Length: 349
Image 1 (cartoon, rainbow, N blue to C red):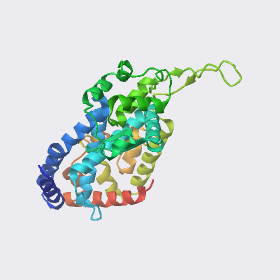
Image 2 (image 1 turned 60 degrees about the horizontal axis):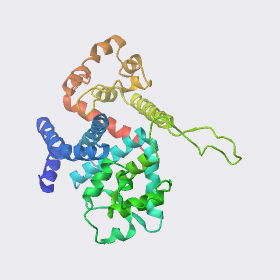
Image 3 (image 1 turned 90 degrees about the horizontal axis):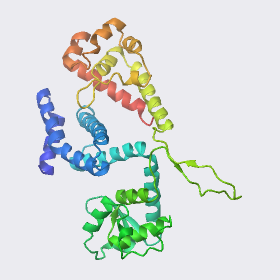
């Protein structure tokens, strides 16, 4: 479908009051418009790593559903003018966040290459016609004629040292771990810009940069000529500061939910779910922010009554309405008010 058809669907989703029609349009937007874009970008960014891809996919879909829901519930929500572009940007950002968490050393290397490409005379970093970031000689950025390089780029994808094995490449520099010389050799061999992710992979292979717990030789001696100990380069475990930030955020969010009026708390917590409809209220248990007893207390229920509901979570709005002695629309309105307050209170945290 074209952009006009997508925009028509967005308007329909934002304006229709029919719950069944909302679900239908949301499904079309996600499965027919978003999913192909998301999957293509994730395959490219993760090089087909299935486990990584599934985690990123779930995060992206959750963000998209949340954004689309806000188009309906929040009058000041900014309109999405180009849904495909919004989906692409959301996916690229999610990939970058995930890969930064999982591969911190690779991320540091990539940032270093970005700096070199943007600060070293003769190099440049720019976006190509597919909006991928590529690096190369500065003269290429402005349309200099470039030979067909697809075969060499494919060779480099399959073998990070392919250019070194080419008999036409001079070997005098090959034992030096100099980023400028390494990039220069790659660019001269391919004679075309190279995507920053591929450059990162090649340099990581060349310098044995990994995100496992490894040790590298620290030039063997220090400035006094004494033998130096090996240096641990990276640890594959999640960054402790990031984990602390995440837990602090969830603690603050829990505290804000607990401060909501009773029925707003119930409207939010009893319907809390991910993009696949699975309940996620146990998130606070997993990170140690709350216990089942604490959640029950916030809902003003006994622990036993809450335990009986556990396997049925998340509850649909009709069932929540029945428990609260409200109409379905009142439950929806309560949740909307709660989310607006939470958004204000959590802004900037």
